[in-house]
Image 1 (cartoon, helix red, strand yellow):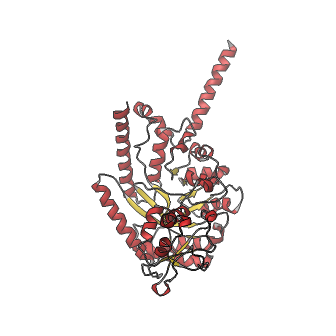
Image 2 (tube, rainbow, N blue to C red):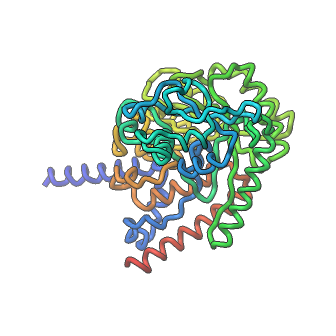
Length: 436
């Protein structure tokens, strides 16, 4: 009898420990309060409201085939090769593209002719028309160019680093690298403010179009970014430019970030002084531009890329891009949970860049189980098959958090969350109506 009592006490303590541990999870409140209907609908995901996309690089969001079609209409765009093309090197000998001013247009007609001088520019239209038959002719040219801009299995699962694709949702924070924009005449003459004018116009057009289709689209904003290889002195110019654009387009500039391979380029600490000055200059200018730093996109522990996490948090980042190595730092996990610093988790990118061998090995569940706010920046459902407790409630929490931790102002955020909650309830009813 005593042994049975001891076993019952043990099981009670065990259940209490599991319950307490799970109470720290980000989705606990929604899970704990979910209805019987939600539980019944737990396996149905296809029509779930997607929330906001908080992590997307503009230069990697356009369909490669469509991009080539647009490029073919621009006479200024040229292409070149630095090595002779052979059938065996089609997948590794990649083209370089550049728009040239009319005064510099090339008269060369072919990349694949034996007389082609390596490194010389050829008009894109001519290069396609003259692409040698042994390489597939014009259709082979299209395949070659498109393949150079897309991810293939040998790159994703071999040793090459590749660029991950991004998708859209009903609110978007997009990264824009403000270096230069070339006009149709091939001249570097498009000022930064014109980017914002175009971005704003297109966003409004999309919103009108989606409204006409009965779809919700709150809008899109830009995270001003520059690359990690510039000097701290050069960064000062970009920071001043960011403030100027924020003053003129307060509804469009969402934040500031530094991007590029953390393992190879400069760490955040190298830019600490101008970034600290940036915060003071914002106060003087009467603007608020939060940091939204990429940090910890690495397998390292104690490396400069990993230590970027400390600097990002100390500098006051609103969100952390990737944060792959965050799970190695219990103090930083606690800080993110308590301060509401959301992590923009990009599982597909992490797998393609070989930070994780498979979706099932991704550290996302560790972040969720420790109560860290997460915005899921991937639509791959296999990510969510790693845990038996990561069901519909977890997905709902992730989607809602993507809005909660966006850079929308308080009023727009309130409206967006209200739209999401309405969509969520409609989603549950839809599931019950069609699959009960």
